[in-house]
Length: 350
Image 1 (cartoon, rainbow, N blue to C red):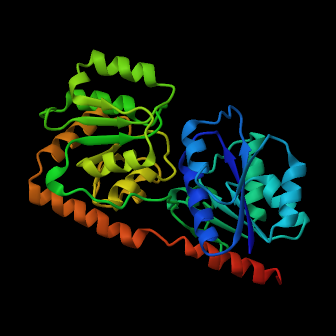
Image 2: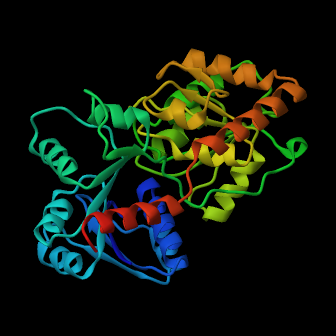
Image 3: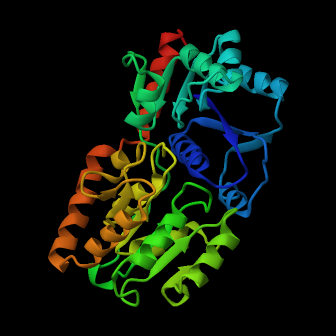
């Protein structure tokens, strides 16, 4: 099979980019020909994190400027099947024009307003052969009147960390996300400052970077948290995975209608349980063994930090093991896509 992936890209190595590469890696390993086209979005700036990830791949990856329909059309003509990441109208419509099957992975919840872009996304989604939604939250937002037969759910994952650290060697809380508004880093710092815990025994590690960096660093100093807080800056995937496995708890407290929440899946895969807010699809990703408070509730989050810190060793180990075990039934193998592609090709008589 010759599979073309078409995905929007901001230039950083985020959840969508990680998943596109994970699927492409699987297809390449299975012997399929795979190509990725990353479509530059407004504000695109190629970051070191993405450059590093792309340098390790053995298949074709290129970037498209906005509006480069000619290149998209040429690549679609050469492919057997098109996999669009989010409902890109150019992918679906050109695939229809050239009579090629097109499937979609839908990452973002459906905005229902009269702006042209959401209207075009909804149109593209209806024209696809099959749509996978990354969570029930996202699925229900696109199909509020009932789910259709050509839809499904497929939580997106990348190369998950696998090396779990011994329970006795773990320490503290960890946050891993872009430092942007509504991802919860401000609320987390307020909660951590309020929590009645021994911060020397329960340090806080902050992984990531973003527009709020200066504000966050200033806030850490103002709250007197400098000695208890570790800020990593840019680190490799290997370093990131190690830090996650060495923490006792992953803390992910957004207030932004989170579509899924990849970091909590990464944590659970190495038996690190999660503290989250009841936001969007995050409770699905974090599982029923996570500790949950309302979005934007610094006091509620502080109480959860205290609850986590006051658990006995046996209580902590049980919740960590149960959270990991539940994840086994939640995740789906990437080989599912190969089967779905073949089914779509058969439906087109190819």
